[in-house]
Length: 314
Image (tube, rainbow, N blue to C red; front, side, top):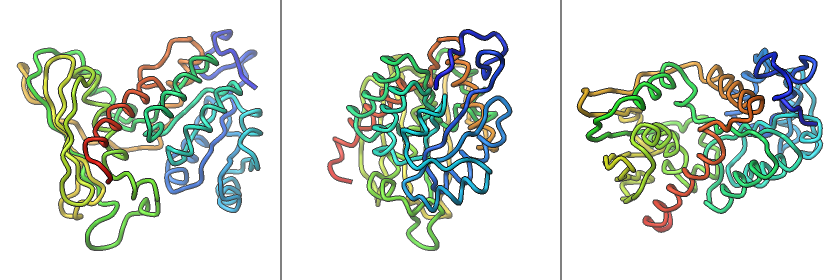
């Protein structure tokens, strides 16, 4: 099932006759429990249709918590829904997203879209070929006040340099790991792939596309990226999931002719996810691709793959 949202003038979430699009969720991990499912259940412009997961018992538990259907097969979910929302590891997400697009579902993707540039490109190409909308849930681009802050900085000129750090304590050297530690792909790919997309998602719209990248390894999974942007500005980003708890934190600072501008704090991640769904439905209704869509996700993956290639095996 796929609505032609452009046929209706009753808002970004309305289908023909004012009916609401149906959204199916793929994934049952901590991120799905804490963010995706609550946000979909609370969203007033769509219907949360159901859940598919690789572990049927986990899918049943999450579906029961929200009073929605359990799908035993992802293709059945695609056939029954207008939007496929993903909360899966990137190497699982990418091929399923291609199948969802072929079934006519709009794509609400998680980051990174994939862990190879070829797989991410396949998702973007499938979305374009089947004329479905796509949005990648990059938290800083939908949370407030960070989303508005990024747009404000993108409107300025005269930038000199920028510096970002995202130091998570998912796998701290001492103490209990976080709720997201039971994640094989995060253990394998580290902060470069998990939090690198967040930093890039802010630096690129403000400073321009990355024209060169140089990656350096630090302790554990720590990676430092030195970036040159299309504007000629250089920036750097330090990324890790294995910081000591006392050293963990997130920050991004832009410096230029108009002064120094620091990324503000943000909260309400489920609310941000709801705004990502709003953006997807708007793109579906208007036919105008969202700048945070699968094409942008593919570009982020290309940059990360180039950086990883300079590091060798993680």
